Length: 372
Ligand code: IMP
Ligand code: MG
Image (cartoon, rainbow, N blue to C red; front, side, top):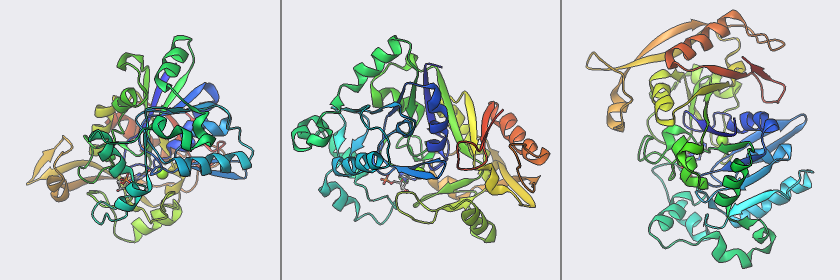
């Protein structure tokens, strides 16, 4: 598909980095459309692990990468990230940075560090977007001369992507964070300050909505959240701890332990809807290896009544009663063969979400990927 959006369907950290690295072999350009160095996208290739914050994951496989106008860019960290990639032998000549992307300054970071409520990544994201919307921000083109290391990359990403699409090139638009962290459609105010959903991709790189051919939603086989905010299926017990240890659920950007819980289909149905998801890719299924029982939240109840629409009011979300369905676990996933119990689990998810599951990831490496 020429133009595909890859979006996280939960609270971020779904494993988009790995999925995009895997898909990148068939594309020409990978472009990010929002967020900044709050993101942490991990890509593992053989013995090397890359942790990307601002540069799209396609860079690892040598693709052209673009940082869209919807991003807020920390130039100092960006230069460091480019240097690190270069010293690891990754080619960094095919980077384009939108001249209209806004700049994250030291002041923004200082201000963000004062946050005690949201549990931000302290990367200055909220304050930088605040200045942008208040029409007092600084754009990359304004400071280009002060950062000659990145000056050569700065250009008009919108024209570049539209031209590439006209030429029939394949483009991935890489989302950062996840659907429930979207500033409009997430668990406000416990959200990030950008539009993470697929619709944000058009705004964040400058293409028309009809340009998008496909939306891929990435779902982790369970749920995690880092920072504050409602999380209905959170497990504050040994099971949550087991998931955290098995899945190494500690933040890529901040190192914070991630809150862990079961999969939530009410939330995921909503994510399918607001993103227009065509196809789902499930990650970290192997983390559930060896569990006797795996639970999935299938509906919410308030005062004995079923709630089918994911509440936009977080107060309501905090009081919903959860209805779970139990699944029998499996021992192991060997040689890319999914055990019947694992198949039952993903078939159920696919049926409930009325969306095909195209790929299952069962480990961090590119090899640990099963196409369905
Ligand atoms: P901010 O994006 O740093 O302003 O943080 C706002 C909220 O989004 C906090 O709860 C963060 O933990 C969360 N967040 C931001 N970026 C990511 C990410 O890449 N993965 C997961 N959570 C994130
Ligand atoms: Mg992450």
